[in-house]
Length: 250
Image 1 (cartoon, rainbow, N blue to C red):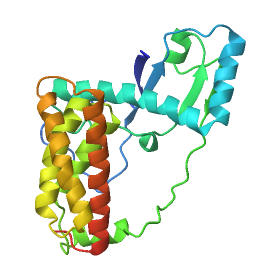
Image 2: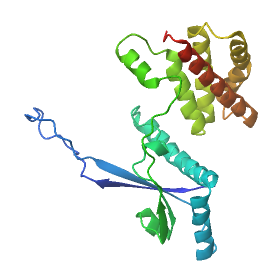
Image 3: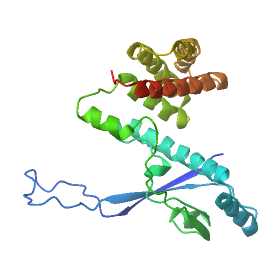
Image 4: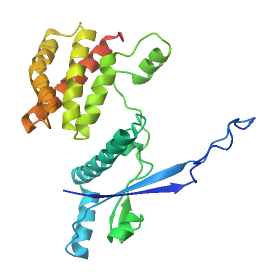
């Protein structure tokens, strides 16, 4: 389904010009007001009537699955725009966003101009998720400290697999296939001590992932190739989790 994306900068004014080249003397580092951006993803198809719109919003409030599907579709639109911006500006810092990175998430309905300005006939602001510490056996905080302290090092494949996951989640099938191929080869080279069954599964992925990457050089891979890449990325993530649990960063 096609969507309309409306972007608006809010808050503090942007400093477009640097005032002089010598900087300003300071005695204390104060917080700097910064602008925020509001992204509104709008369905172009109108609801049949007010009752239909109210039923849609009610379903989103009551169904976790429907709500997550709606938010995932909106994020895909926004991240596609960010991907285009990143490419056009050659700005590597303009990264994809997630629901967790949003200051606030709202769902609602109204006229097109109305919702583009952040106003609704009826709207619902999702409760903010509490900052829960994810309890896993991987102990990410401990590893973070080990990485900063130089006791462990980041494997190249860890970053490459993360990039493949980002492309997969954003629906960038061509980029995901190409990224997955180098991520897979890097993982197999950097993590030699994998259980036999896990290594065989990853080596078996070389063929399908390689074929998907070759197809991606010519155009978008087909559905079967895309699914093979997604499954391979999942197996790479599982292999890295197992490796981290076994200790050693490379």
